Amino acid sequence: MNHVAHCLLSYPDGDDLLGNFIGDYVKGKSWQQYRESIQTGILRHRNIDAFTDSHPMVRLSVDRVRPFAGKYAAPVIDILYDHLLYLQWEEHTEVPFGAFESWVYGELERRRDLMPVVLRERWPRMYGGRFLRSYTTEPNMRLVMERFVDRLPLPVDAKGVCDVFFSQIHFFEAEFNAFFPELQAHVAVTKK
Image: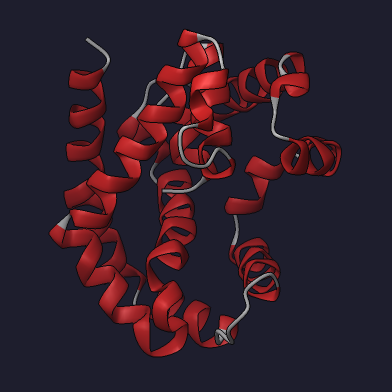
């Protein structure tokens, strides 16, 4: 899962949000340098990623984009699933998207000094651009995918990925709808 899902799965705990948000930037055991409430979010991020990567419905989606994304098919699906989460927002949470979005920006802005350096440098652009809105429309998703593949060392066909996703979105939606409630239930159990 990508930003929208990771942030939602931390709601309403701000420290958990920060940990979950920075999870990809905290390598090895460096998570131990953070206070316990943020460590929990970092470990939650890793747990969410492991659950997602091993889920059979996610693997079906990954296989569908693999011809265009190669070894980056799994992170591509993470990004695309955030679009599906936005499209089906009311089915998965009672928190209005606008209120959620404001909460995320406020909590992360208050904790920006705790972000790893590379993320802290990106944060003003992300915050100013209201990055969660990037997942809301097809044109935005195509731009997100182009920006993502530009950072990769190997080529990925961003247009091909988006074309197959939007032309077969009903298959991806079915897989996402089978997967995401199970992820939510899994995370709820780990929060107890």
